Length: 410
Length: 152
Image 1 (tube, chains in turn orange, cyan):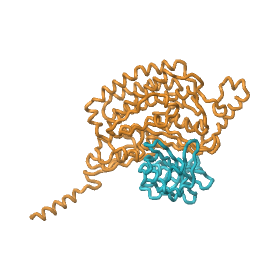
Image 2: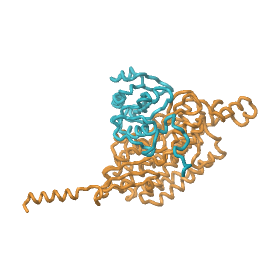
Image 3: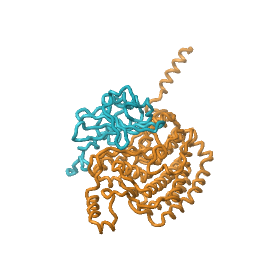
Image 4: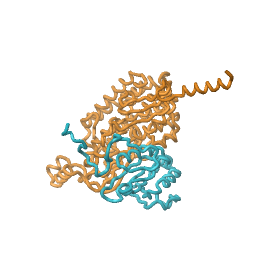
């Protein structure tokens, strides 16, 4: 066999071993929709070359419930209950974003106490959301105990929500025009007790993870994408702050009197899974600082706007004043009318930029509510984040993206 | 942002400018949407927050495709809007300008039946592939079943 023959044989052998569907080398694998690490019903179709991911195609829509369609059939105030059910880990942020948009259309002035109360509760729900993220992310990476620790603290937060609104998850506590209920007696003590123990708990988590060599090896340098690419794909929130962009809507476009609070925007440069972990841990500390400021300086005053045509009257007034009774009847039976127009207010939800584009045609039901949810934008980067990486790293990357499938599919 | 400050070359493609509740809105000629988007991107609007549609049924033009643009550096937001008639709900895709438009346009196609020309992968994203109709259209019912269970 001369050299040429040898070469040609080698070429044929190469051709024969050329990977194609059905060989052991390259395969297509279906991950989800019920895979435990997808945190919901997400299906990812993976093209694999051994352990390397050649292509990842996410398939969403399993949790599509038509919330945007349903919103067109309900009155403005009723839609608040739908917003709870999108991103079920940060429902108060959803309530807030929706109410701010409708209040912008109505041009309502919200009293300071209600604004501060909204800030306090959305920050507690940010801590709640990050705790669930931390617990499940670490569970994916094999750190079982973190899951129990995080859910222990989350339980306290759910008790706070229950104390305020009567509901643990679907609070609907923030309403168009203010808050649903007067804060319960002794809320300062309940929130204060929790806040007293939280920083020590975050220290404990960081002590377990931040310098942990196994955790660092699993997360450092994993799930990286250049920041321009992330922005181009529509990624927002902690994911781009971990890639060096100092952009937080609470600072850039303050809403609900966030400008009155003193807090830092945590930024990391590395842009990997570990950096996202650091950003979210720091965000929990900053959030707890904001809650402390709320506890210290909560203003006095009403919790609802002075807008008799929008806000339900007090029980007492309803029984003594004719007008109040009429307004109550009108608001309950047909809902309040919103002037024709379009408005949106972007909000920094725990996952990123959240906004409700509310279109009104002058009636008591919205013509269109477009929900720009952060998880949807973030999930778009999945294909590129997975491309060319190892399948074991994909689990870490998926967890660090922190999406909620209810938020993606709506 | 008023157009005179804006001084973009494609200003002839902008049919109207308005500021409502502090939100700037440009009404864009649907045939030239990609051109306008590209110029805005070059001017620093590096993020596309979202794309969706408003259905003004039964009015004409029925569909209003809106684009929410955002500039992180300048901390500015602007809305673009293009109106489409119900007999030809088609517009060029802006995926070439912002990759993030991909899923938003697919969603708008799925739920409103607006076609985005030159989209790399225009398939349904939320509804099943064999679904008939576009659920977010105003003439699509909120409740009800397509199938009859009486014969079973």
